[in-house]
Image (cartoon, rainbow over the protein chains, first blue to last red):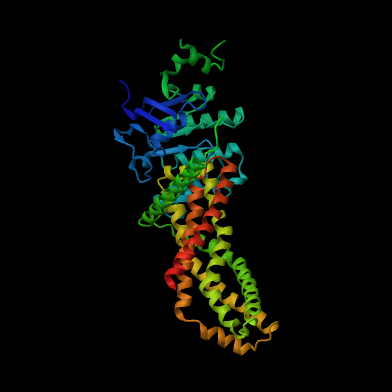
Length: 248
Length: 257
């Protein structure tokens, strides 16, 4: 039996000026499964995630988490309590130390005491294979790979039921990208979370996906399991997955 | 070939200005609304130090030289009407009612509005504002409210300091160059000032503090693009803050006269 739907994009349309970025997009992410969204640049992948996070309000349609509509641009939306997000740039606050970044939600929203929050942050650092001595460092003192791991620690520290990953391996060397992919896989499995990842990185997709959706021109072009995409009959999907132009 | 149409250009300009005014008014409304709710005291104290304490040298020096130059100019003008003796009175009134608040606010527009716009703009560009949202923290409450409240609280204090130092600048020139008796200079300065002169200057300062921090936050919050967008936001913040300070100064002075 298929797992219940955790996140549902229902006929979502979003325009920026005259450009239609999402054009009646409908997509489901199932509970406990890892959905990877692929597609070329500018096809609406990031906007898809941002509508689920309430960062962008759809012009039409609705995004639902557990059957409840996401309230756009409202950080008090209870749906956000069960979400962890890894941003492409890391998006760590450069005015704070690493542990303060990781424990930010616990300190500011949860009003947890600093010693307790610090202990939780160090625990999260260890889960992403970073040494506890990283905790007191500033963000500028960390390499790109370490920043990604610290961002991942921030995403998982509250043990969320849903994890979003926006281009988690972009800008990383292949070895570090592999480390990040393994960490993502391990954390998603250990939390039993629903994961939604957008990526251009096919190695990443192959490693972490249970299901794959390809977006083209703001719509779902292809949707299926990881096995199906490798020998997909659709030439556009095949070209994207195997890194060839569609004309070849 | 398209012929340049001045009416169309003017119309576009007016519409763009109205759009900006509307957007700023909405942002101001959202800021006021965000005051109600969780308050980030740590952020507020940090901004008090950044906007207030760290601006003291700039504001103090500017006020000192402005007071000194004002005394010299008033002396030159007063000499033509045999009214040199009014230098202390006019310097004190001019600084406390007008120049103290305006000069301090303009210096802060350059120092603080641009800094806020660049900081928040960079946070926008690096998705830190989006991250705040996903961490269930309202960016308006965390970033904007502490800065705007700090501006409202701290600018009157800075203006009070600027008033004292500005009058002292006039005193220095009056006593050392214009041969005023120190006791007479101080007495004349004190005698001319009424409580309302000081209070009206401080009210102006609070309004300017609101405007210059709001402009920094507004332009930073709406920054788009990378480094160029952040730079543009900082420039727009300074220019719009300065323009609003001059406009508000005229309106408040008209009300207070």
